[in-house]
Length: 239
Picture 1: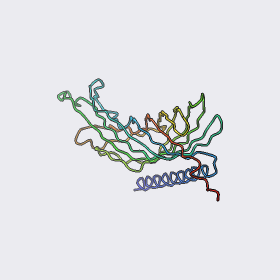
Picture 2: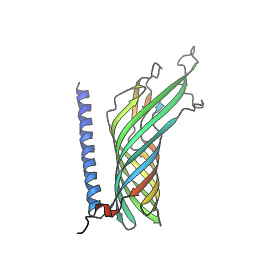
Picture 3: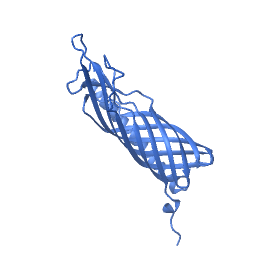
Picture 4: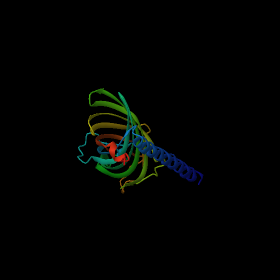
């Protein structure tokens, strides 16, 4: 009882921290744009997510060919970019939709049972992401960047019965590069979670997986397209 209440309190505190972070970011987004100190823009990205794999399985067959892995997703959001000549700071607020499908082959757990079993896992999630990007312009329109990424899980679903996700608030490191031409920019990003997120499998649709878990740690490659909204849209017209 105490443990359950402790987990609920932890989730509540995480939600409050994330909400305050989002509100603060929204304040920065609009105030920096309205005062002409930064660009306000929109972005869209396609993600190759490597998550949802089944780990810690006994008698796993590593070389068994399973052409089932399929982890994709997309995201969209808003950002502001504060230009500091050769550097820039870019806070973002994104909504991410992800899904994955993975399978693992393993042998029976006894000498009499040498059959090959297949466990298939499907997982979907919706998250709010708040990355704070610090960029450096290296040559003309080309720049590199890195920064922390804060994420809060809004919803998730799995075809397995999984242990409750206790910590919905995660921290990742994001690195990448981009090319920018006027108001359009195209970037490639890699994001890796700094805290491991392995969830115990309670029931795998009748397949026996003793002490196995699902790895939900962020491990994502993204292709992003961004557009800077012209300053004139936020300036008052003179009479």
